[in-house]
Length: 375
Image (cartoon, rainbow, N blue to C red; front, side, top):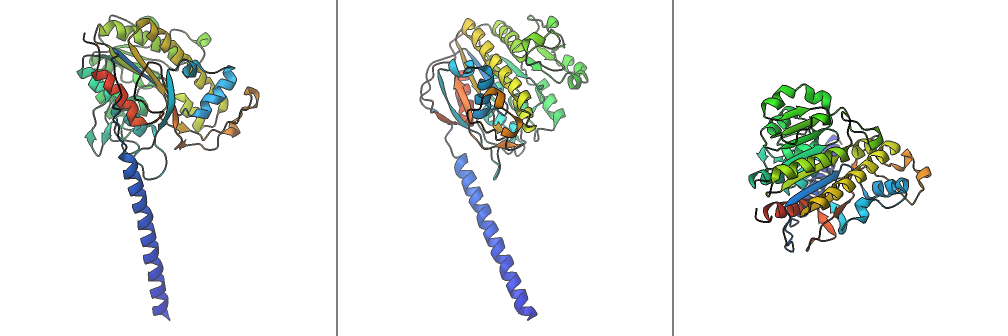
């Protein structure tokens, strides 16, 4: 009897192992098939001197729709676009959605990596578009509302095995030759101010000390208010520092052009918290930033501007509710989802499909970083 039971148990265990192995193998095959998506976009033509990429961390289609309900009209982010579509955001993860580190790496390098990795996979650094821009003599900048130690800005400016390796992130940023870093996290960066200054950056915490003649700039603030009426020189808005950065980079770059990445970090944070009011405030701030960037980009001219997101956060549901009806319960999750995210292009491009892999956004940026008007 015991022998029969043992045989039966063994058979169950073997069957379970086979099923698990089959499921795992199927996931691996599915993942590998996704990773084979071609990044090349053969129809791209023309030249742009400058490239600006804006990222609304955590922004999905319904975040935009809810924000527009409060705004009372379509965002300029949408109405000023020459073309629009959706971007796929998956990472190398077998199951579950991407995190910001992997999605930022995809948007920065054109390569899919494991969640948590910062422009690096299995210990090997992956060249970012920011590094390529430096090599091509362009002026460069990285801006993030939360501070440039976050996963998204790090994906464009650093290399690390894990997004939480803040020492590695800062160390590689300091040797990156990037001209400008700006954003929040003043308390963290004040502890490293001497190190930053020793790396050749002018460190400042007040926009009155923003020096357009400085060789390199590193500006940090306690927080970036979402409302310009509440801003001041020690607490500027994301839109305000973005405009200042563009003016600086444009002047510094001369005829060589510049590449700038700007992140609104808190759409994601507030969506994790299922905090509708705060998410909407940052959603409107992101639209304000895109609008301000487009205004100055038009003044400068010869500038490619793209706005997108790294992933959707919160599983936000929106079905045409009025601004007054928006509430926290419209979030269905507290984490990232696999949903496609919007992208908008504000300059004429050929050969760009309506649905993109996020790595193809990196390819678009890379194409115009390496195909610029002769200086």
